[in-house]
Image 1 (cartoon, one colour):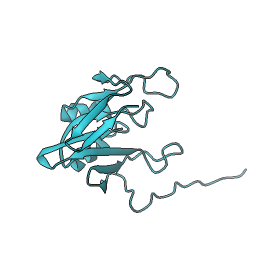
Image 2 (cartoon, one colour):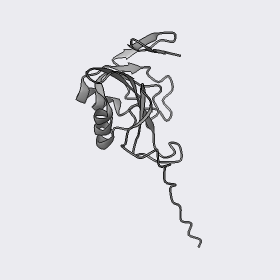
Image 3 (tube, helix red, strand yellow):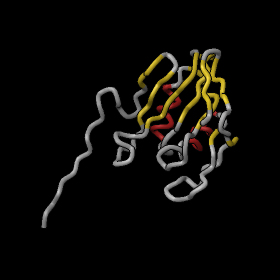
Length: 147
């Protein structure tokens, strides 16, 4: 009998679970606590927006798994108010966190339901379904286009 020991590689120093890292003045990344073969060191959740405090308006992209600590880390990392939650796709490492994050922030969830159930979060139910070509204005200098 052969025993094989596997260990997960530690994420690079700039990718620490639950710690927000500014990638630019408009983008912050928070690593979810779900390392694995498909997620690498963990799912990347992004905050995109402008401004701080009561004037800041921030969008969460791919809230990740419905993990209580991760949801708290997202809220704590937001420099301003979270005004919407975008889900790029419904893999179970990207969309389930939208439900507790929306409940905690009151932000609407935008995305598309899955057309195929295999390996997807079939419970995903956005507040509004996005359509290709839509432009989402996040701030005076920040716009996302839905593809």
